[in-house]
Length: 550
Image (tube, rainbow, N blue to C red):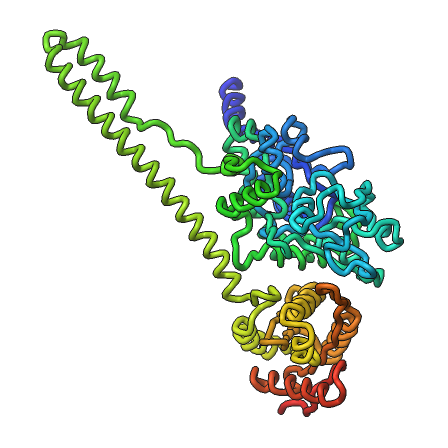
């Protein structure tokens, strides 16, 4: 009886769950919001649901994330577009997902005395050896490596502010916050200005791990992207998580600045997080090849994790075995079965030819799909962006303003508009030419793009007119923001040909509901205030006249 009871108790004990598999993720830099999606995947349990216990490792000065993954010290890593160059050098790496659709890598230079990328020739520049994108940018602009004085990177913007170097490499999502906080006047030079538009952070692994444990790779990628989706929906929560569990190197304001700038580079409302466009990678390879950094015709697609190979049709092996057995069993009918075998051989050959034709057609279709995907990316951007300044266009502004007014009415929040016009722009064009005028408009566009919040909507209204929608901002703060833009724009000095150019702007400010409840009323009042600013002498900010709406 006791034996029966003991056996029943043993059978009633549930089986022990398998222990989570240890996984190491090697970052390319220190803990900060740049890697928020992976922290969120740990905190929300996405990795544990996938069966992993994930250790996230900060980068060390002497450690290359690619080398760490290739030699097996880490299972996964974060790398930039130079992964393509590493693959060409024989390092067996494979890209699994793209996190930043546009690279944040920039050159940050002191504004005084350096008004263009060409002014860096002969200057002291802090660059890392693997920042191939910036070397490609300099080479594209006619500044090869030997024409700059390369300095060891200290990773400290204080060296730039103290004048110990003339420029440093950095991320548009990170160092500009510290420079602005210190009140330091600087210029940011992006490779995108020269047509070099590479991907930013990429999740990658080794080809060996992908071949040996494809299910592990797929599950880790899926859990990581779930983490990124969560992080971009809850930036404040994830910023608090970073401060509590990973690093206090940056304060919360700095982390949220990173989040805002990363949203611009990820474009999660237009492109799915993790999306990999093979056509875009081929263009990156072509750029490297044109600059002599990669062989022409290099098979770029080998870098990308594609669909798994399909197994042989399940009927093939049994059919061949059946033919062999039938041949042995019916020896007297050898001729008949020989004929059947030849016919089956012909059918198999025809099927193989058909499958080969289908694979060719599939490959051609995939190329067309890549081109369509690339075109869709371009069309989405063109539909809402101004081609000269990369700000939102007037159509996007009109669609957004009605929606934001409705939200302000529903949530009882303020909303402000700032309408901006470049002073004496026609005379400026007549004196210096339209190319110089375009440089001024691009410079103003860059100022507005870098000095607005993620929820703000800076737009080119048309010609030399710009308009900025500021949801949730009362009119007093909007006026202060416009005054800051006016002062910074007046301080700008732009080099064009052999001339140093400068000009000023005027701005008019209006707010909901003080100046109206409808879009056309707010725009009309902002435009009237801008007209007053012009009439009163230009280079000033004027708030629209008006009484609170009933």
